[in-house]
Length: 199
Length: 174
Image (cartoon, rainbow over all chains, first blue to last red; front, side, top):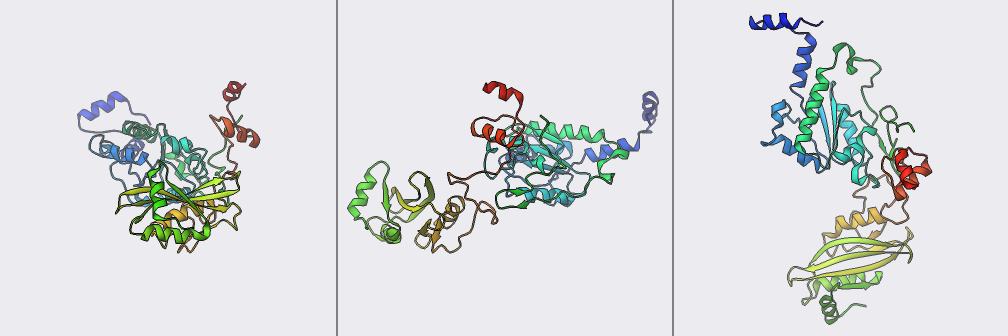
């Protein structure tokens, strides 16, 4: 697969670009990661700041916040996921087309953060949906979100077409949406996505 | 018993003005406070509840201000027994329209039923939820399978559930 770098460089000087299809495919995917336009709490304000003029997420091709999950590649879970909101977050994720990625932004989205012991706060969005990048912080600065985006770009550029998760049959196309129960969400976590670490 | 204007004025002069009334008198007192020309409590800024578990009662607190006469706050308090069936208080939504959502919140979190409320539903928790989480005897669901930095009650619950707690935390407690 690999092209001799010297030959590649020589050809490039002649105006001929040689590269694997995979590289072009991944390059075009990573250069236009469109996030879903939704925010959950104060982290969303930092996300908006990252999209505004000073930090300008457009430099990474991710400025097109889509108002529909069907047009989006990336879900930025920006803020506290309350138990009341969790089914809607999972449903939004289910509605996104593959390939799709998730960034858990801030302490609350990672673990519940300062509200962990609250009666209505989910202890981390990774209990229901697979998370690709975690950003710590309360809230993380816009630079941290940009770093997460760059990390995600790196991750995408390393993916192989023949090993892609979304082409595999065993990968579920949909994740079960939790139901509102009498005391808690049912189930409290999706065992296929999350289980407590071993002792 | 409905207080006189002078009594309310005296209360307002103190630091934390409060007026505790019986449930039966609440509506009459509220109407008096709102309509009396010398008091004119035209604004109810806050409705909340306090769970006095040892005294077996729940106290509903209304904070009243007068925008017209620029005085307040006056805390209007009323007590009801803790038992869910008897935990009823007359709604003040007909008097101050702004009480509607806050009374729904007190109902949701404390289980106080407001008689005469136009639309008494849960406002924060989902409709299928049965508990009232701000009550002191509320038991949260057991989801302490993984506690990276537990202490106090959380640590005890994690141990009771057999949850994973880092060894460093357990050693530090010794």
